[in-house]
Figure 1 (cartoon, rainbow, N blue to C red):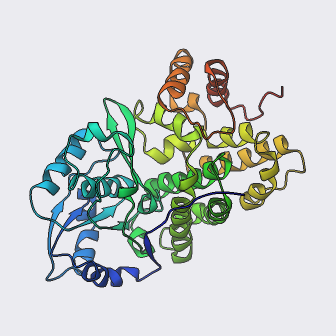
Figure 2 (figure 1 turned 90 degrees about the horizontal axis):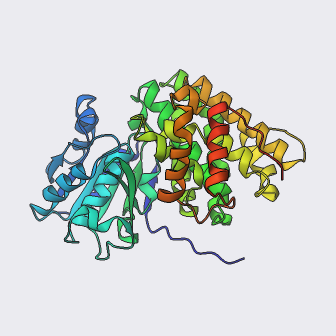
Length: 385
């Protein structure tokens, strides 16, 4: 067994963790900080709650982050962070705000247009220190080296080790005001992260351990948090499940996220919703390739489907699909509104733009088109060769 794992981020977790913010800022010796967030955080009072711990410390606010941010938003935050001698960036909000905060920290020290850094390893100079404060549970962005931007209608990622956050301050209290729709979408995103990471050919013992516990926590608590958002134990469990998903993300995603990218921008969907649709079908179609691992993920999902890996995959997929349905979200591409005539175009885009070399299942144009048809029809059982 050989693997590498990189996690230099300091993690503060639990109700009341926000109280440690000031100490972390002071430990980093920050003279002037930039707080990157969105206007919803202002309206809900979360910015005020956070700023109470920054009293007397110099900071400015950039609050123009939008969901699934376009490259133009990234360019705006770049102009902001380059306009003053900041020495710390704070990210407050969901995955979009955290991604823009990480990117701001990287762009402060790396000159160039945002588009020039799309890809892997193109941001090379050390970024400003960052503190991430997630308000959803969630994207796991507080523990990743990735920032997502939308360029000309397509999702693009900027990956670099310099984007890894300095501190992840995860206080479930900040998630208590999430509306049902956001609880559902971000919770599904966390479930997809843990599940896809576990099925990845790049998985290792660390990511598997995190992913399995993350799956268990989310499957046991997402519906509870969705139904009763004031229930603190379920909110805490969801925050932890999302955090573990961030750890598991080091194994990289498989084609569930790729499918999500192809439909997300077309239908203006929250990221978790677009990735939640293919999740059940990914599980069932990866079962044979991941046969030795299916028993453990079945246990995490609370499923007993026998010894046959494909039967297990279908049973887990059915459990995942029931959960998506309980969250009042679409479970098929047809239900989403995808036309049958669009399936081949989407499949082609998935292969060409969002290839996954770490996928244990190899897709070509024909097999991907068949997979899209399965998701359109709601067929979980894969073809056996």
